[in-house]
Image: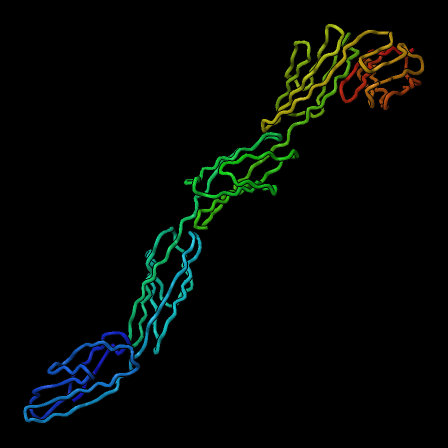
Amino acid sequence: PDFTFKNNCQGLQMSVYGAGSSAAPKQWNQWHLGTFNPINRDSLAFAALDSVSRTIGYTLGDSAGCFATTYKTVILEKLSAQMQVDKVCFGESSKFNPTIQNSESYTQQWTMGDGKTYSGSILSHTYSAPGKYNVDLDLTSKSCKTRITTPVLVMATPNIDFTTNNVCDGDTVYFNNETKGKDSTQFVWNFGNNKTSNTADASHLYSNGITRTFNVNLTGKYSSGCESSKAKPVTVYELPKCDFNANYDATAGNNGFNFNPAVGGYTSYTWDFGDGNKSSSEKPFHRYTTNGDYTVTLIAKNNVGCDCELVKTVSANFSGIVGMETNEIIIYPNPAIGQFIIENSAGAFDFKLFDTKGSQVLCGGGENSTTVSTEGLESGIYQLQVIDKKQIKTVIMVLK
């Protein structure tokens, strides 16, 4: 008698196949498996259990009444595995570290549950969508073959999105959160200047400065702990500068002024001269028909739509040869011989003296008063501007 076997693996169904020869015709056989001794079966399968080895006997009898028995000790190979995969957030890699017990060399074949397969050992896999996946690991050795199936959970992350707009200095930036399911999401805004907010929608006022761009980041987190972020740039544009001078034009006659902005080249200028007249010129000329103090407003707009506004008081007073008292500013004597005095009870001031051609011939300043020397100047009519923090006063000076 003789027999062969296969699947000699712990925990699997082992198969045995009877064989042998006899001078007389074969009449019967019997397997000796311990407590299980089936008769007249040429082959059979039985549970190999978890023992390290198994002694199997096979008896073959013939028609002449002869019989013989063969015993073999079969080594039961081992191949088993266990694995648990931690849940991850979408975008993260799932880690695979199976615990494998084996007595023979083996191969691995992975089926990831998303259409992807791998041969050999793997450490991680990144899924292209959130969901639950069943991962099969097939282990194959010479004697054994086994499969373990492990669930893998890939949890969803927020689909972050928001809208905003560029603004001018001094304007509030509004951020509209367009994340779906935002009522069940925790948010953190980072405005790019070390300032943050935890509201769903947000607004922020940046401090004034030159034109600059901030990288604004919105992070959303689910209760599962899974989070994602999105960043967008926001530009805060510098405002134009609205300072200006109103220079008396002695060549143009009574109370004619040339208005000059401190910065030229803006997209638009809007002047309101305070007497019902306006201009959209960059450097307009305007004549006042009556003496008085006028509130002049300049609005300038740059090429990105940001504008500024400045208001100054301009004094139109073609009074000729008398001492000039304009609110807190007093100028005397007028006409002047060799010098004249400027007094300003409001504090510090600057002054400019122009000839009839509009050329500046003197300039200076003082705290509350100053004496202006006219030595070296020709006799004639001049325009005097006195500028303090509240107003620009323009008078006609006569020098002798």
